[in-house]
Amino acid sequence: MAWDNVQCNTFNAGVALPDSSNFIFAELDSNGNVIPATQGALAVGVIQEGALLSDPVPVCKVGSITKVLCSATVTPGQFVASDASGNAVPATSGAHFLGQVIQGATAGFIAVILFSPSGAKS
Image (spheres, rainbow, N blue to C red):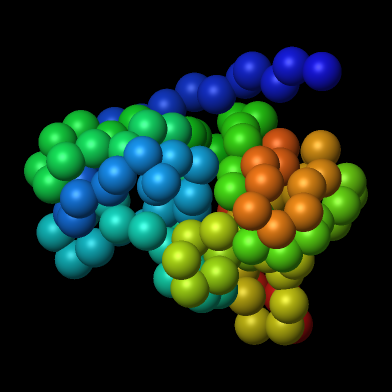
């Protein structure tokens, strides 16, 4: 099953983002550049393609259906958050919801989510 509904914004990379950075949650640094999201952070999107430092990085917009790399098992319908490396994990207390799972995956694999960030889970 194919899921392609990704609309992107472009930001400059605040750090080098190798291909292993593809499909991880992103946040902005104090200069407005993209960096991997930290644990529980409110992400601005999901990095679609890695880049060198200061190069343009495509990051999905809110409402996009996108792939995301998981570091824990996620299941359809579940809400996800970012771990310390920007990977998707099930949302827990205090973490920002970043999206809802459409197609689940296990750790180390790619899930499909609707990127729809919101407030922290209580």
